[in-house]
Amino acid sequence: MRLVMLEAADGAVLCVEQDIIEQSGTIRNILTDVGATDKPIPVPNVSGHTLGRIIEYCRHHRSDPSRRRPRAPLQPDETNASEAVTRQAISQMDDFDHDFCRVDQGTLFDLILAANYLDIPPLLDLVGYTVASKMKGKSIQELRDTFGVKNDFTPEEEQQALNDNAWCEK
Image 1: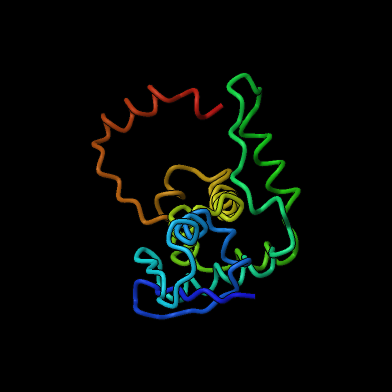
Image 2: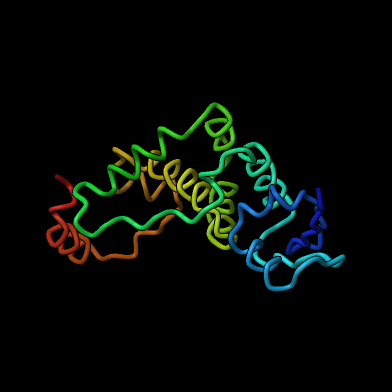
Protein backbone atom coordinates (compact mmCIF):
# COMPACT_ATOMS: atom_id res chain seq x y z
CA MET A 1 0.00 0.00 0.00
CA ARG A 2 1.20 3.49 -0.83
CA LEU A 3 2.30 5.70 2.05
CA VAL A 4 1.33 9.36 2.30
CA MET A 5 3.39 11.86 4.27
CA LEU A 6 1.55 14.55 6.20
CA GLU A 7 3.24 17.61 7.68
CA ALA A 8 1.51 18.96 10.78
CA ALA A 9 1.42 22.60 11.85
CA ASP A 10 4.32 22.06 14.26
CA GLY A 11 6.51 20.54 11.53
CA ALA A 12 6.00 16.91 12.55
CA VAL A 13 5.89 14.59 9.54
CA LEU A 14 3.74 11.48 9.87
CA CYS A 15 3.50 8.64 7.37
CA VAL A 16 0.24 6.78 6.93
CA GLU A 17 -1.21 4.35 4.43
CA GLN A 18 -3.25 6.12 1.75
CA ASP A 19 -6.35 3.97 2.25
CA ILE A 20 -6.39 4.94 5.95
CA ILE A 21 -6.03 8.70 5.55
CA GLU A 22 -8.51 8.85 2.68
CA GLN A 23 -11.21 8.77 5.36
CA SER A 24 -10.39 12.48 5.40
CA GLY A 25 -12.28 14.24 2.63
CA THR A 26 -9.70 17.04 2.65
CA ILE A 27 -6.73 14.70 2.13
CA ARG A 28 -8.67 12.55 -0.36
CA ASN A 29 -9.40 15.67 -2.45
CA ILE A 30 -5.77 16.82 -2.30
CA LEU A 31 -4.57 13.39 -3.45
CA THR A 32 -7.15 13.40 -6.25
CA ASP A 33 -6.06 16.86 -7.41
CA VAL A 34 -2.29 16.50 -6.95
CA GLY A 35 -1.82 12.78 -7.46
CA ALA A 36 1.07 10.79 -6.05
CA THR A 37 3.77 12.91 -4.47
CA ASP A 38 6.92 12.28 -2.49
CA LYS A 39 6.50 15.59 -0.67
CA PRO A 40 4.59 15.86 2.60
CA ILE A 41 1.07 17.22 2.35
CA PRO A 42 0.81 20.24 4.67
CA VAL A 43 -1.88 20.08 7.34
CA PRO A 44 -1.44 23.60 8.73
CA ASN A 45 -4.33 23.63 11.20
CA VAL A 46 -3.46 20.42 13.06
CA SER A 47 -0.64 19.67 15.52
CA GLY A 48 1.45 16.52 15.21
CA HIS A 49 -0.03 15.06 18.40
CA THR A 50 -3.61 15.62 17.21
CA LEU A 51 -2.81 14.33 13.72
CA GLY A 52 -1.36 11.19 15.31
CA ARG A 53 -4.59 10.67 17.26
CA ILE A 54 -6.63 11.12 14.08
CA ILE A 55 -4.50 8.58 12.24
CA GLU A 56 -5.05 6.19 15.17
CA TYR A 57 -8.82 6.71 14.82
CA CYS A 58 -8.75 6.23 11.04
CA ARG A 59 -6.55 3.14 11.35
CA HIS A 60 -9.01 1.55 13.79
CA HIS A 61 -11.97 2.26 11.49
CA ARG A 62 -10.08 1.34 8.31
CA SER A 63 -12.41 -1.50 7.33
CA ASP A 64 -15.67 0.39 7.92
CA PRO A 65 -16.90 1.57 4.50
CA SER A 66 -19.55 3.87 6.04
CA ARG A 67 -16.72 6.10 7.27
CA ARG A 68 -15.37 6.75 3.78
CA ARG A 69 -18.26 8.73 2.34
CA PRO A 70 -19.67 12.08 3.29
CA ARG A 71 -22.57 11.88 5.71
CA ALA A 72 -25.94 12.29 4.01
CA PRO A 73 -27.59 15.57 5.03
CA LEU A 74 -30.70 15.32 7.16
CA GLN A 75 -33.96 15.93 5.36
CA PRO A 76 -35.71 19.16 6.41
CA ASP A 77 -38.94 17.31 7.18
CA GLU A 78 -37.25 14.74 9.43
CA THR A 79 -38.75 15.00 12.91
CA ASN A 80 -36.48 14.92 15.94
CA ALA A 81 -33.47 15.15 13.61
CA SER A 82 -30.95 15.81 16.36
CA GLU A 83 -32.20 12.80 18.32
CA ALA A 84 -31.87 10.64 15.20
CA VAL A 85 -28.28 11.80 14.67
CA THR A 86 -27.47 11.15 18.32
CA ARG A 87 -28.96 7.65 18.21
CA GLN A 88 -27.01 6.88 15.04
CA ALA A 89 -23.73 8.16 16.52
CA ILE A 90 -24.20 6.15 19.72
CA SER A 91 -25.08 2.97 17.82
CA GLN A 92 -21.83 3.18 15.85
CA MET A 93 -19.58 3.70 18.89
CA ASP A 94 -17.42 0.81 20.02
CA ASP A 95 -15.08 0.43 23.02
CA PHE A 96 -12.26 2.07 21.05
CA ASP A 97 -14.41 5.15 20.42
CA HIS A 98 -15.31 5.46 24.10
CA ASP A 99 -11.65 5.17 25.11
CA PHE A 100 -10.55 7.50 22.31
CA CYS A 101 -12.69 10.30 23.74
CA ARG A 102 -11.42 9.94 27.31
CA VAL A 103 -9.04 12.85 26.95
CA ASP A 104 -8.70 16.27 28.50
CA GLN A 105 -10.92 19.09 27.30
CA GLY A 106 -8.17 20.81 25.28
CA THR A 107 -7.41 17.64 23.34
CA LEU A 108 -11.11 17.08 22.73
CA PHE A 109 -11.50 20.57 21.23
CA ASP A 110 -8.34 20.09 19.13
CA LEU A 111 -9.91 16.88 17.77
CA ILE A 112 -13.13 18.74 16.92
CA LEU A 113 -11.27 21.43 15.01
CA ALA A 114 -9.08 18.89 13.22
CA ALA A 115 -11.98 16.56 12.32
CA ASN A 116 -13.82 19.53 10.88
CA TYR A 117 -10.79 20.82 8.94
CA LEU A 118 -9.92 17.35 7.65
CA ASP A 119 -13.57 16.60 6.81
CA ILE A 120 -13.99 13.37 8.77
CA PRO A 121 -17.74 13.45 9.62
CA PRO A 122 -17.87 10.30 11.79
CA LEU A 123 -15.04 11.60 13.99
CA LEU A 124 -16.64 15.03 14.19
CA ASP A 125 -19.91 13.37 15.24
CA LEU A 126 -18.09 11.30 17.87
CA VAL A 127 -16.22 14.16 19.53
CA GLY A 128 -19.21 16.49 19.18
CA TYR A 129 -21.40 13.93 20.92
CA THR A 130 -18.77 13.60 23.66
CA VAL A 131 -18.79 17.36 24.30
CA ALA A 132 -22.59 17.45 24.21
CA SER A 133 -22.80 14.63 26.76
CA LYS A 134 -20.46 16.61 29.05
CA MET A 135 -22.84 19.57 28.78
CA LYS A 136 -26.11 17.71 29.27
CA GLY A 137 -27.90 18.50 32.50
CA LYS A 138 -25.50 21.22 33.64
CA SER A 139 -26.56 24.64 34.81
CA ILE A 140 -25.38 27.79 33.08
CA GLN A 141 -22.84 28.38 35.86
CA GLU A 142 -21.55 24.80 35.66
CA LEU A 143 -21.08 25.20 31.90
CA ARG A 144 -19.22 28.47 32.42
CA ASP A 145 -16.96 26.78 34.98
CA THR A 146 -16.39 23.69 32.82
CA PHE A 147 -15.54 25.58 29.64
CA GLY A 148 -13.92 28.66 31.18
CA VAL A 149 -16.52 31.10 29.88
CA LYS A 150 -16.54 34.49 31.56
CA ASN A 151 -19.94 35.99 32.33
CA ASP A 152 -19.76 39.49 30.89
CA PHE A 153 -23.51 40.17 31.11
CA THR A 154 -24.90 42.66 33.58
CA PRO A 155 -27.57 41.09 35.84
CA GLU A 156 -30.25 42.84 33.77
CA GLU A 157 -28.84 41.55 30.46
CA GLU A 158 -28.54 38.04 31.86
CA GLN A 159 -32.17 38.07 33.04
CA GLN A 160 -33.30 39.37 29.65
CA ALA A 161 -31.38 36.58 27.87
CA LEU A 162 -32.94 34.00 30.20
CA ASN A 163 -36.41 35.41 29.52
CA ASP A 164 -35.85 35.50 25.75
CA ASN A 165 -34.63 31.90 25.72
CA ALA A 166 -36.93 30.37 28.33
CA TRP A 167 -37.98 27.76 25.74
CA CYS A 168 -34.47 26.23 26.01
CA GLU A 169 -35.01 25.26 29.64
CA LYS A 170 -37.97 22.97 28.95
